[in-house]
Image 1 (tube, one colour):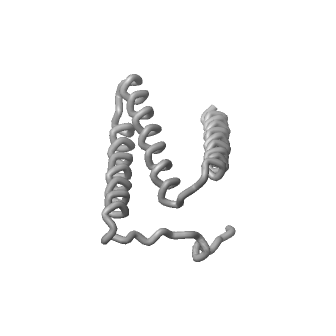
Image 2: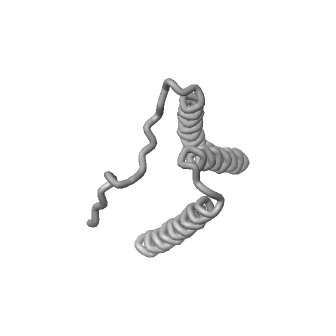
Image 3: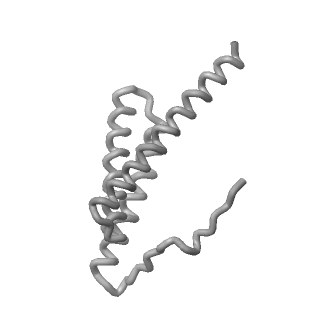
Length: 110
């Protein structure tokens, strides 16, 4: 397994004395709590339409978290594009991995 140090990553230290930074922190906490709640509801969802609605809410919340993070690190539109392209690549890779795993599991059951 390969390990990487995170000591060189830029970590924003929140200045809680600054009202705008505190507000941004509070909004991020609110969005993360909302995301956790949505994922719990998704795990408990029984109907397809409920799952679809929750997945849309999760995607919207995820986008809000991303935008808040981009603002925090003052990313340019070009940098945002790079980040979002990388995210899409990894989402696609994850979907492919899950599909391959499902195929393998079905073969084992047969």
